[in-house]
Amino acid sequence: MNVFSKMNNDNLLCNFLLLWVVLFVFQSKAKAEYNAINKGVIKASEVCLLSPKECLTVVDKKLKNTPTHSYLWFGLLQHKFDALYNLQRIEDLNKAIIPWLENERLPESFLITIYIYYAKTSLIDNNIDRAREYSEKAKNKIQAMNNVFPSPMRLVTLANLQMELEEDEEAYQTLQALEQKFKSSRNPHFKMELFGNLGHITRRLSLPELSLNYWIKALRWSKEFDNKQQIGTVLYVLANAYFNVEKYAFADKYFTQAEGLSKSAGDEVRVNQIKLRLVEVKLKQQELMHAKNIFQTINQDLIPIYYKDKLEALGTSIDNM
Image (cartoon, rainbow, N blue to C red; front, top):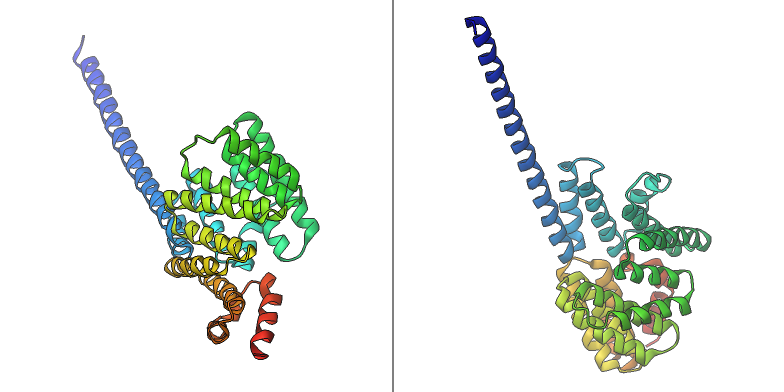
């Protein structure tokens, strides 16, 4: 081997080693950046479990540092949609989801989320035809996904959509089958959603005592799931269930607990809904001055449109006291 040949071989080896080092450093840096982004998304998810208000602040910040159209990015958007809906910021939610509605080239779970929320906001806007259209779209996608990858949680979502479409008997059958099949499940999120939806459907089927029993079960699992916002929601609906069976002392107790949790979660919309319901409870208990005092603390601008008639009726009752 001559000197020049040896030098060329040495140069090739050096170049190869240099390239390997560069690639190793690049991959290590990329992996570190991905891990940092992933940790940030996990932290955002933890915040979103506690407070929808703080969730929006954290998610908007994390979205700027997360690769656009990645699965992590779409996951953050779903947290944002959840928070906007929980805070009943319906106009902001529509602005966030409408640009995505005609784009079919999106992750299926993300499409299902935007279809469901657009159906829900359409109901609030009293656009029944549009609500039904997007509920059907979401339902069809859930059924297609479940045929390939069966999921009990997805079937709970399907039952919820069946309720939106007023397919109450079908929804009840779906949920009862899940209750029987997964009675030994220890998954707190699944059991909370299952019993909560069973509570909803039995109320719709005029079975108030059974509905109450399901909400008592849902409360237990919501505490195991340990999501303050969800616990507050379950307490609120449980209080409604006690109100429906005329057990006003229990309704008072659980509305008050729900109010405390909703305040700590920064959910001012829910806080004012609870105050409205507490006024009804106090009137039933003949605590008229207490009812009047609570009514005067309600921020009427934060009462959802579907509660406006109740607000006006209670206001009239208070004025006539």
